Image 1: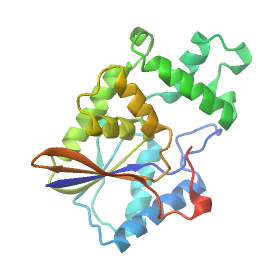
Image 2 (image 1 turned 60 degrees about the horizontal axis):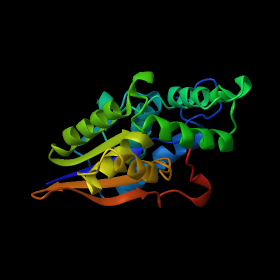
Image 3 (image 1 turned 45 degrees about the vertical axis):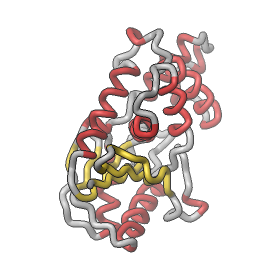
Image 4 (image 1 turned 180 degrees about the horizontal axis):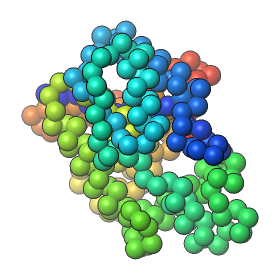
Length: 227
């Protein structure tokens, strides 16, 4: 029996020149999560992260907070989808004014609205050829990464992002989800993932089961962030 802990990275630097950098809050969230897991007596047999800097640095800060000595491993299957590219393509397709076609020019509320509309278009299946990574390709990549993590014995901690984690959750609770239903399930999970939220997936004789989703009680109220 194997246990996989899916961890969303700490808060990144929204609105900065380089989004893919943990904010001070993101570093603190990550260290606190590591300490919380250590306090609970959890000692992972593997620590895996995607290739994004925010994912790698979250894994490093977690290990520091927990006092873990195991070396992190890279699995690019856990990379986030190109959310800025998807939003930019969505804004363009939806006829946004030229001054608002850049995702980085939007404030948080406007970005969230654009994100929801753009990802609905991306996952709808009618425009796959317009994206560098289509929705089906992204789903296959994320579910493949989950299969690799679930095949390990012991406790595997994976640091990823909201998109792949939401795919893992949707595919686990409904492995037979249709092409129409999977995006709806994915969106329901993806829109509420907190930074450093923990999702637990167990693999046993009957297959994979979702035990918990988006645990973030390790964070003080003023530390809870979603973007």
